[in-house]
Image (cartoon, rainbow, N blue to C red; front, side, top):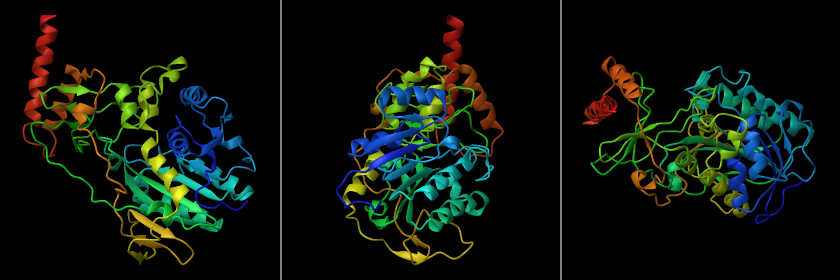
Length: 389
């Protein structure tokens, strides 16, 4: 089935759908979802509530085909084996390797469009073998492809979150989708009015530091232990954001993942949110799929075999080329992080603050001026409050 002309919404099959970040963004752009596939019970509860009436298949391994009217397969396939914070087993891992089932479906019927998403560490892990595996499979199926690392901050959301988005097409130039827009990323210096995010679970090899933003929200523990970042607020408080603000940082409405609590513990919602695709990025992609009016390509250069993967590249039939384009396709106005937060934030516990400080004292990291003093003052306040209780 050939893809239609620009301007016509697409019928989508959402595989590895999670809590529906890609699908919601595409819906907002005018596309429709005909099938969802997701195995995690909490995520399934969210999909059943938020996408009522859309068939939900629960195991990619038993999905034999997509219906003939499907025009796009979208898949934010598992990142556990490809993430720097994960198992780093690579594309052969039991989770990330499930993307092979996407290619099996495409062998059954080559749908006009494919959209894939994953972590940027896949460009580096094992010399980028996972990315080469994915792109080589797409090429063997006869698709043109382009990929681009995109930062969610470009869309006005105070979360520093880079992800790789791959768009493949049988009939159109995917560069017209992905390479539109090239803004200079905004990098801020902290001042006394600026909130800064960090991961209190780190402190030895890294910090996850983000100025006027939170660091990338993570999936966290497989047993549902919450893994929120911490925020150094302008007034000196050290807090953890509410799960409802975490949902908003991903472009969802507050309480989007609340249906998951019917089948799992509340803390598991952090995993669902951390694994999700940012809705605003997916909507931008959905808008681009309707327009296809972007420039064919920014400046390109041939990719040498074995060379490191760049942050953007393409192959539209003449070989693989790197592309010089930023991680910010747009520049949406952002609210300061401290004002973005809508729900009461929880103070970082004394135990968590003390553990973080202990790690920093044996670390060789350099910390922002005043930061360690702020953590120590917070710990003193928490201990004094506990002693007075």
